[in-house]
Amino acid sequence: MPSTAWKAMLATAAGYQQPVPGTFVVNIGELLEPASNGDLRANVHRVTTPPAGRERLSVPFFLGANLAASIPLLKLPDCMAADGRCLPQR
Image 1 (cartoon, rainbow, N blue to C red):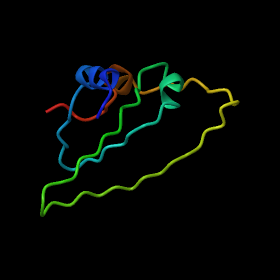
Image 2 (cartoon, helix red, strand yellow):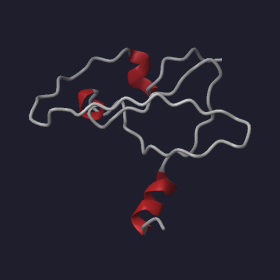
Image 3 (spheres, helix red, strand yellow):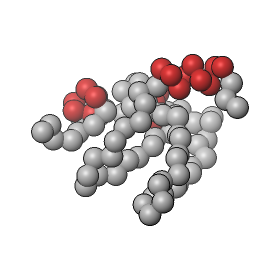
Image 4 (cartoon, one colour):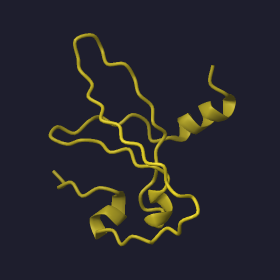
């Protein structure tokens, strides 16, 4: 059973995002938040079981960061700094 704090956090999250055909999703870790000066935000990783007959492909990669290291500030392209994506607007 999720805690009250967890339910409140989920209620304020952006919610489920429909996949965009021809693209893939990258869930970033918290290390990129300070490196991007907050322009890129880590998400809460939630996975649901796909309906019967549908596939779900996952390629996880986990990196243990050195917590004593300094984090350089990254200069993002303007389109990424604006809304976190560089997809052509349709």
